[in-house]
Image (cartoon, rainbow, N blue to C red; front, side):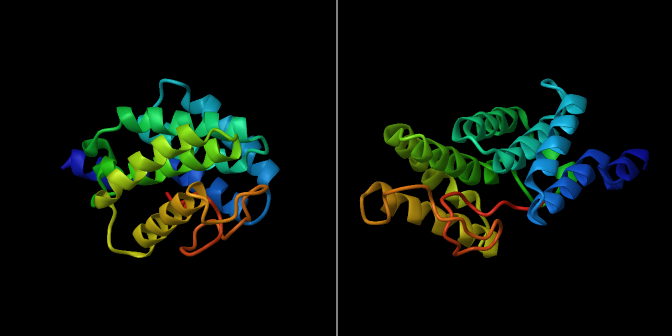
Length: 185
């Protein structure tokens, strides 16, 4: 009984991450970045993998330098590799860790494109495409699949190739950004 109550209790760190995500989506990128850094200091490099994965995944979006964005996306992937389905079920019962990988690898592919490292981008894009079976048949899944297709076309020379990617909505499918829509915590 106590274990069930513990699982049902809200995760305060995930709530705080969600609040910072809303701050970022509201347009205060610098304040969001500062708050994420303070949360990261609390969580620590060896903290809960779900917290580290989620925070790093969103922290990447607040970066001005593509190399810093890549570093945070790599942290998110590393934390996801430590995450278990059991831990994730305590936060979001229907989601499996493997559902994180299409988005994580797509973000890394987009980072590498921004850095002009097309072969690394293609490798992560291949991993993203290989993992899409874990996504649901919903708006988020469709958005990630569409973003993979856009980046595949861009790398194949069919899409825009010059300059930085055009910004798109942070969570909406069909947007113009390179990366996937970020799923809210």
